[in-house]
Length: 50
Image (tube, rainbow, N blue to C red; front, top):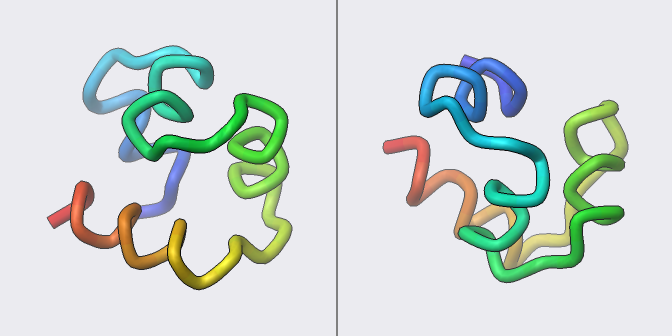
């Protein structure tokens, strides 16, 4: 499952997903667009995705 699919499966906006990851919405948008996330954020994302 990719980041966008994870977000949409939970009916979250990009802003809500960013809040859950404790990052700014712009950073989340970049991750969803395919830019590499920073390691701590990637670990948190993997934790949330299960």
